[in-house]
Length: 433
Image 1: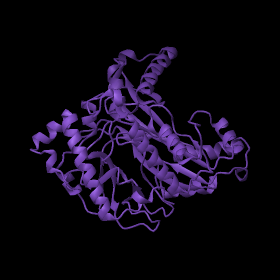
Image 2: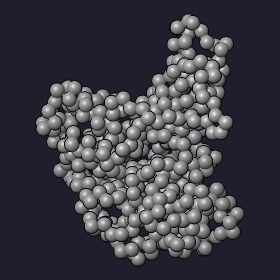
Image 3: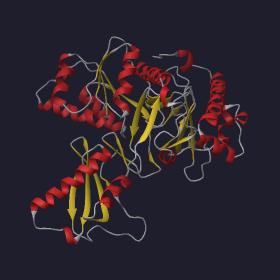
Image 4: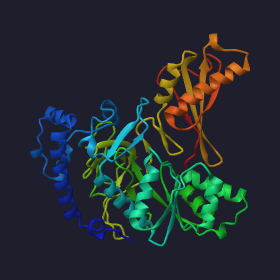
């Protein structure tokens, strides 16, 4: 079902015209309000008048995560702080979060985008939706929350942390739709069995899953166990949050909401724009965002685009499932984790050698993270209490940076394998099959 057929079923030609108009306005605004983009364009001998159609986007510079870091915290904001009504943040590569500001209009557009996603999944005003993404600086919880309200359905802001209470609410409130990470959905099923509930007593029919990679096999498992239809939702904090793209009833790719987010696929090495069907790095431009608009943002997500019209009636471009990333970022329990973040914590503490290894695995259906680190000989001790205190210090510091817990494993100096080339810092034992 389409929520906004005027935009979702727009003809290819009309959409290109709309994108061109919005791109020109965006570039004009950024040129005059964001020094970073003005300097970039001047270095390329570009003026806003050079950008008239959507095809002209290839003349413009790329934006990277590093640019966000270098302009921390608000250097890329395109409006005064007085116009920013909300801030979200995601993990950065150096421990500094990526700050994203939203104007009131941005939040209205975000809610509209989420409503489109929900409608395409079959959610309507009669549904009861449990939002079990994290609330707070993470975009998942509040993004879905306001989208459900915009649609007119009932929202239960479950968040995360109390699975037993969550199950009771799912059962007693006859919740029909759940939004969470796919791994949490499987954990939820195990807990339902543990607490003695019968799945036939629940009213669930739709699951909205994102925040971490998942496969069609995982989809089938979730659908069979929870008795639901499972849909993928895609987004990233830098662009908006969840709701940048969504599956439909056909589940033949993920529709990108093109009137607000223009997609390109590039070769990660050469930056050459690639044709339909060829896998490369997804690049997104925020055509309507006011708070912190981004031009040609390199997401690092690897996928391909397809412009054939979908049988659901939506004419928006579809992208394939994300097949990996072109950088070293991990997604653990929905949180972006960079090895360099953990490295910076270890290097701050004099007790440790600058040698570590991250082991990512699953316990049941939940992601786990173990940090193996070498303790300097002068700090190794037979005093168990002293070692436990040191472990807690490192664990607390890592959690403050990552917002997730990690198991700390002390190993002997020299025991972590060295490499002549690039060190293997991460072992990911999760299987995506």
